[in-house]
Length: 200
Image: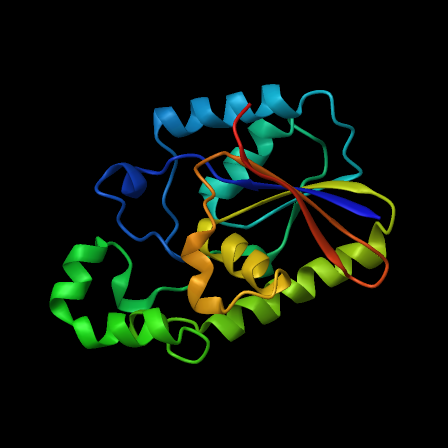
């Protein structure tokens, strides 16, 4: 049984500025985001990890470094990069809906095959790459414990898919900045959600 501690990165400057969509844009952590990462480190300090994996984006990598207690040999994996939100990146939801409400409606109803922001990724593309990552680490650590630091959309899409939810319902799963979600994967890849959105 693989135990996965799934951590969302700390607050970014765009999160703090009206929750602008970061997507694949490489935005740094705010002082609050750094403090949130330190809080996560306290929460995780007694857990012995076999490996630590992170998205290459600085907000996730920085969070991973702090939250893991500066674990040696953190592994960067491109498949954990946040969803590309195309033309929506850098804008608030209110701003880009006002620009093109039909595109938002299409994405909200069927993100599986609609490109986010017109030029970004589809939900199926996101789930495919994230699932490929978790299948690989399940093979590497079939009875291990790992820390994975990634992003709001990729984390929620993966969990929605593994829980059998329609992908359009991914926003119904809450994962706040630097919150910890714990799940397990058995030898057949069966997903069990053990804890969600923990801050203490």
